[in-house]
Image (cartoon, rainbow, N blue to C red; front, top):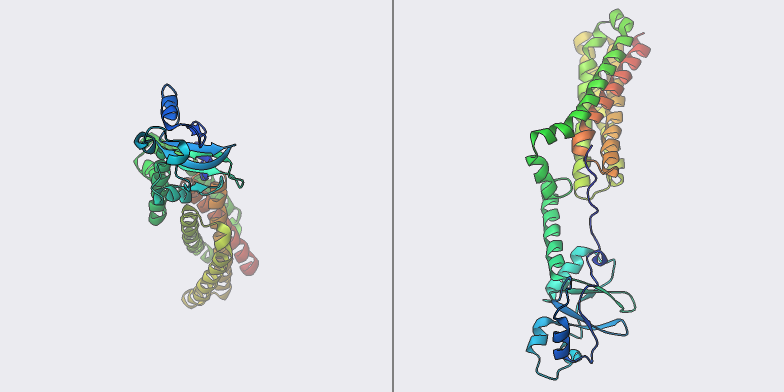
Length: 323
């Protein structure tokens, strides 16, 4: 329902460019400065000094301008410049340049061959992007702070576009749920007390699912995979269902005096809470895998799925026990 986001650059080589000045160690500095004129580069702040394709140093334009006449590139270059491997994470690469006080960062392979240079504007963009992401993670936003801000400030028409399709799915699910309840009309007529607990079972299962869904969406927003929390969350959902069943069964029997209905309510709560936990984990994960924002879609779909399953579980359990 949302546009597919642009691919996120994460490694050093994705930010590097070959459109930079390249010189040899024995090149004359004055000749190099003359060669820069009339040429357009992605960045000319740093000159890569290479010998047979292997990087031997970096020289800034400032060093070239300050060099005395007759100097060579080998004499003014930094012979131990900061370099990174192609697959170095972008944040680590940017900090390597900052800590060495260099305006550019060379990317080299295992043999030291020059693959490209990350220009200063890209280094600044990486640092800003990583800062933005860190703030987003601290705030529990999905994706980046800019994406969360855009979602908060978008026009009414965009809000409707993002939300209404999923809510229409929810409406269809509500109609289906009404049909499911209608199919148990005879059982409900035979024992009206069963109908009293449909909202309670549905609500409690929804509440348990909402808690799980919130944890999963928060986890996805900070890079925690669903698999890491799945086992503990399933166990937690089962234990919550067990505790709710342990309380609801005796209370139902004490107030209404019907042991069969009390047993049906307790078993339905146990099963519905466990199922709701699984649904609430799977749907956000699916939305994230499909590059859709789980904030908009997983909630309505999870509610529909949980409601239908909770109603089915409760009424099937009640029918089997009460008859």
